[in-house]
Image 1 (cartoon, rainbow, N blue to C red):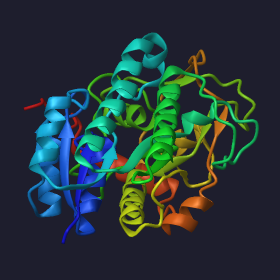
Image 2: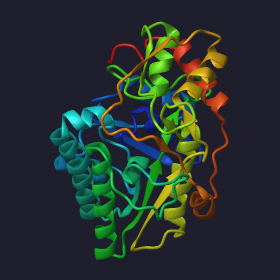
Image 3: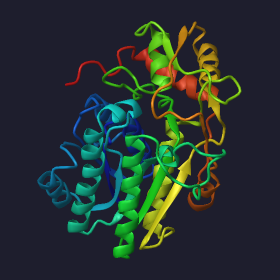
Length: 345
């Protein structure tokens, strides 16, 4: 029997790619999304790529009655939780919003899973749980201590999961600690389409390259890094999506035992500075990428990149795409969809 996977936030950037890979692996994905930062056109296009119907149920993970309807309608075997807000700067300005949506939403979803006996969880966590690491690359046993409310919401949700699995051995949980997802599906049909000014580097550069933005703001050039700009571990969103499939399979196969919560890093292990990313984008687009250096952003750290050996060991997963492929695929999406998905509808 084909396993049914509920993908909360499955209409978003990462979620849409996860749904494509789940369908390709033979799973039956069901999407729930409140469309706060996504366009239903994404799931329509996913359905075309997947060659099968993908249900999109519009609702919020904080709405228990909505979730009960979903769990009664579909035999959910695994839940992948990607729903939430994700902008570091916005979280500093609006912490209550982030705790409400991210932590409150996760708890509401876990309660619904508990009510309906669906106790396998793949959680979309973040490298921000490590805060400002003393050294790099980062392994899963590093001390945690987020430097901004967004990261703290991810860490709190991980702690809730740890307490949950300790209380009930029927629960199994994997927290995938993403580094920096970029790129797009090679069809150029789905990709990142932020509703407002992009908060992340690649979508902002993409909008500069396509003419939607005048120039890139580089937040600080006085970090203790080779060129003074922030260093991050960028990972192709398709690599990331495939890791969710492997995590889902691991839960169903019992690789992650009941009563266990396993945090796992997902990255390439290569640190890339902002200026190195700009140069890679110039190669991919053959266009100038004008930029100006501005003040550092609150909550940002100097360098953050992964050791992903545990993912290889437990999930038989490794990143396949390099920086040039990430830029090429992201640019193909943006250049063919200069206004993203267009007006929601």
